[in-house]
Image (cartoon, rainbow over all chains, first blue to last red; front, side):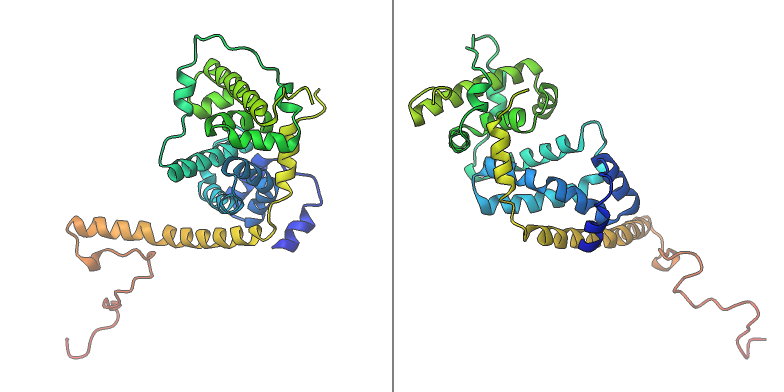
Length: 200
Length: 87
């Protein structure tokens, strides 16, 4: 199978939706292999960012792709394949963290109670221009809820609407959650490194 | 267009750490899941129909999951053949 994949992947790149459709029509594992190769790294990166544990991230990637394989017929192209896959990934990580801690991940509460308080604006550059290893450390110190919204927005480029659909919240609630997550990230940065992230 | 995104840079770094031995493991599980799925596809509808038939009061021999012409109940003799001594 590996030879077949490498020889025929030399041509034009089919879209994700094409690969899914062809896989469902022909049940040929070659198409699933292409999807795996396209996304396994990204899924692994998300799992590692969320779980901060290599062994768990490896297991998570395996479980997530089995889940995707078994549920591929339910993918309805309402969203991009990547968005669907990342939703499965985040849900899997949230469940795992929840089971590990035996407590809920507090995103829904955070999102619903924020609406009327004034929130100071933190520019995106505060996070985007951080040194990579510092960002990793800051993410590790954030709550799972804050980490997810920041990863979705800045790593996955998910739209506010896609995030609102994922969390089943309003778009304004999601915007507020992102703003608060940025404030908390900035505060953690200052705690860890003692100065504003943009002054380095 | 922003030049540097620490999140993307972190993602690229973590992506490069994906263990290569993961792919054969995933596909071995995918193959097992596919095989189990095929068995379930063949077996489950038949088993459920048979169970429904039996619960509904039918005799076990009356219902067959096999396609027509492939019945295993071979007691019915062709018309042209009469058992000896029954004339």
